[in-house]
Length: 289
Image (cartoon, rainbow, N blue to C red; front, top):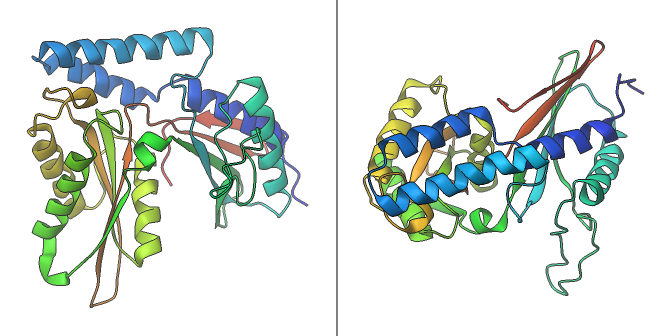
């Protein structure tokens, strides 16, 4: 068994508190920048209300959104099978202590266990590596944005133009439902399931860093400009700020396929990470899988 310097259960409680009560700094900066260039009076007031809400949430230590989402965990590095039970215990504690809204229900009976657990919960993705640390990342995902997820199995001949059309249509069709200004996660390639997973993982990438892939970096910029020129605006009420960023991940795919997925993060795209090593625990919100 791997001995860690701090109980994983405690780390998970701290992670969920950090993610839900404090907006990542890069997203906060993007909101302030958006308010600086916004000329639409309604849009400006919406951005002001969002930023005021963020400051109050951090000050009183309460969740910044009443929908605290379903937490999606990513575990990377060294770990053993006991970590799943510790994450479950941490989530159950955090639901009571922070508190988090109990969101998980049986998909058919709609029965709610009241602790954010249940069959298949929490969602944990394991990424084993040779690193000498354990890194736990959490991405709480609310229903307003998650329900706007889209997958398209495009024809390879559709190319870049088809990809851009699909992403723009997905965001504009979502309208104000995912609480824009949003962060748009895009997956390109892989298989259908891998593509959707990449779109969600893309939301973890800091929005103040350029994409390492020059082609994807260009696509992100073009989509950012197109979406912010749409006029949809904050909360779908009009304005110049529909998205704060577009983040894209890709994987090679079958020669006869071109999967594209969109996973939208609302203005409160919450994330936090903890790197657990022999020297202690380091918490961060600048996550990068």
